[in-house]
Image (cartoon, rainbow, N blue to C red; front, side, top):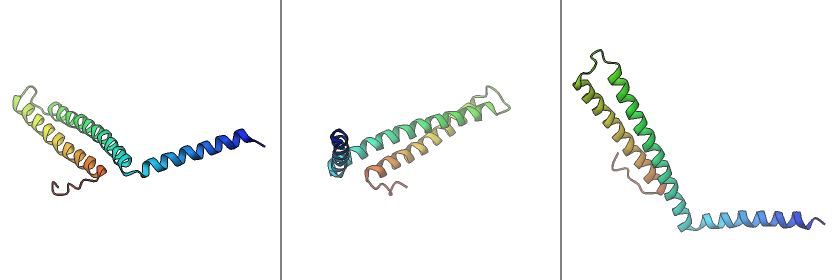
Length: 106
């Protein structure tokens, strides 16, 4: 007669059932999807910014001519292009998670 164990087991099942019922609610599942999309979009934008800065610095450092303004401009342009392409991709991923089809962009 382990009533404490039975009560804990039923409480766990009740809590699990509550979570399943809450996620089945369309409003709650959409809110969770939006929060997840915002977090993933933020992480992907951060990674794209880091990658663009890394590539820009590598291009600038690997040229023979040091201190040339043209090389800095070109590497900055390439870094910006890479960042914006990856930013569009991350927003596409975020919209796809939410359920908005943005296939016309691509």
